[in-house]
Length: 123
Image (cartoon, rainbow, N blue to C red; front, side, top):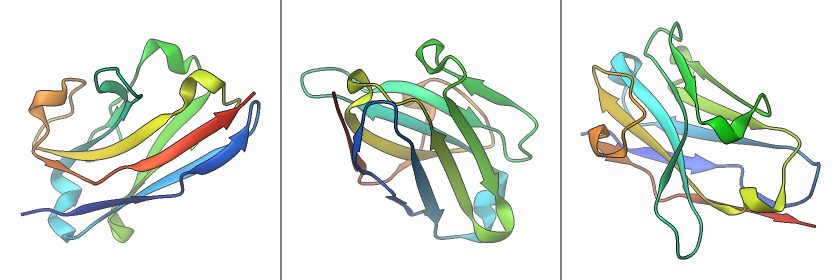
């Protein structure tokens, strides 16, 4: 069992930045692919970014367009999502998830999910 806990959400003005963190409960999380997803009210959960256990493979959703950066520190069992140039349409609950042995953009491939952290971007 892997537990993941997100933090770092909040309210920010358009054009601002936030850094989300995802802390995992086990050192073996270093063998897991980690991903960030988001879900806005009335919409389906969508892929944002993913990173392989080594950090050698990284994927982003098209709407990221160089604004977001995913990274991980396996020594700290933590994954980060640096979000810059935020837009009101980025407003959503952001979720961190762990996928055993793979790095993937597919939500159903992730085994463990956090509770989410709210990001609100005002115009």
